[in-house]
Image 1 (cartoon, each protein chain N blue to C red):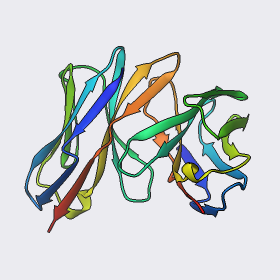
Image 2 (cartoon, helix red, strand yellow):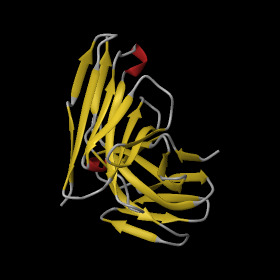
Image 3 (cartoon, rainbow over the protein chains, first blue to last red):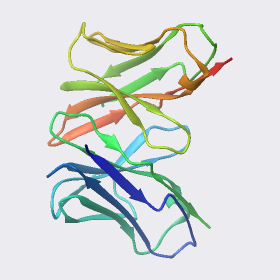
Image 4 (cartoon, helix red, strand yellow):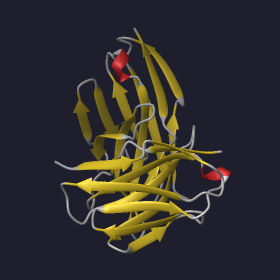
Length: 111
Length: 111
């Protein structure tokens, strides 16, 4: 069966520091991969999606970037965090016309 | 603009008190609709997929239905462990398979 791992679960970072969140998927090949941010009381906002290695598309302009160095690995990064980058970050995977399946998220707090 | 609206925002039920959650949408090119359950501090957990009007899916105390403009999640004789936020999302084709989420209904079932 397929599983998705996301880490760390919680992260506290100072403003201006770099960020790297990692997501890996097991048990499937060539999945579509997604990064979302969920703000309190708001819906999930799609940040990035990827349909293959090295193929990244951004949905909204922001201070973040994403990379897909391997088929089942998706990384969310920032060179310098802003206060507004605080939130709950979720990684997801799917196959074509199938539901997206989510990891357990990373709670990011910027101080 | 694609829009997904869920109501009510919050719902408190007594154990055994049945009710329904609503998800209405204004989109073009609907490819499917998904229901998810999200527990605090966790990623959304997939529940159901609905693809066309008139379709129904059931799982334990939950039943999902769909018309051309809205979907319902019916909860029959809920238990406290059904307490969670329930999210609906519509699957669109926008150059890629995009999910647009509603903001969810927070359900609290009291014993």
